[in-house]
Length: 388
Image (cartoon, rainbow, N blue to C red; front, side, top):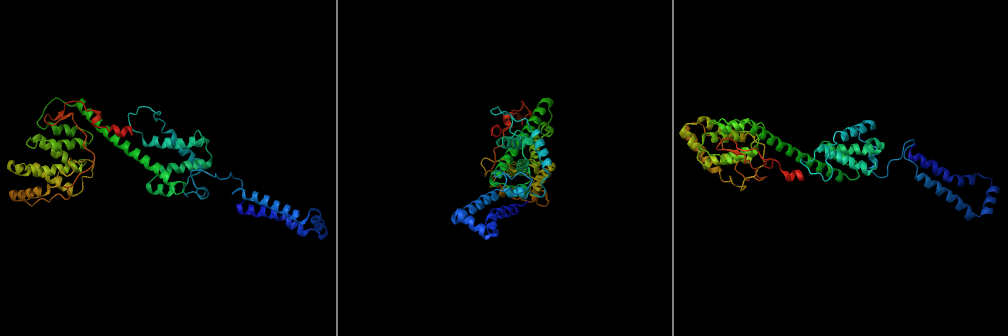
């Protein structure tokens, strides 16, 4: 029965003594007022009405169901009018059980971490903490209302941004649940960066174990191609430190600059060095048309937006800021010397580059064209991020 119906019923009962007194025979009503007195009789009727009205205020909102919790994660209105796509309570509970049971390898408090927390374990820890606050032990011990609250919290944390923003408005403190979502998003990004760094280290370690002692003129390029995980920090070192007069290192640097995973700061450094070292003029003199075609491909790739990575910094940040005029003049000369159409200038390449400093790749020897020592994990993994 609706709460309004309850209150009408109880209010009617509260007024029934007064109504009854009006229906009593006049002589009986007069004797009642005479015996108790008018003030006392009215006080009795008023007291009965107040008592019953107080009971009406405490009437449940629904009949046959437990009352909604006065306090919780959600607004009361969210329980009355839940999202239309909310699964059945049993399905919610099963989803939470799967979520918590699939991530149970969290390290104990105070344990020395060898890797950052995963997103799944972070969500599991969040949900488990809420269950502990509710004095529960598992999703199976929660009330249906608590299951709904925990399920919607998990959806805010793990769902799309649009869905999270909409569901957050069902909570008493939407800013708090969105802050939890942001923190777990940072955990996800930190974990992803760690796994990427570790994959590069593992690939380099495999290369170290499997590389041959046989030397060849293109040893550096051969070794770079054998690395089965892109390493933008290595590409950056090769570009900045290669000897442009060495054919093997020159070819390796061009190959690095051609990789889609090459950082924009690295490509900018490569193009800036072309002008500073007059490398295009030298290529014309030695008739190295293949290398010239490769450089043109790098410029075309830049202008078409095929270098999305912008993580690395230059030192100083404006190291290539003024390289544009020299490269443009060199492209003019190249067109005159070769009798071909002038290449397009790279657009927006010579700017300031801020970001993180490139990580060292000390195990590599550009001169020898190979790894001369096993890779050091500290050169690949950001342990400050792991500790965080």
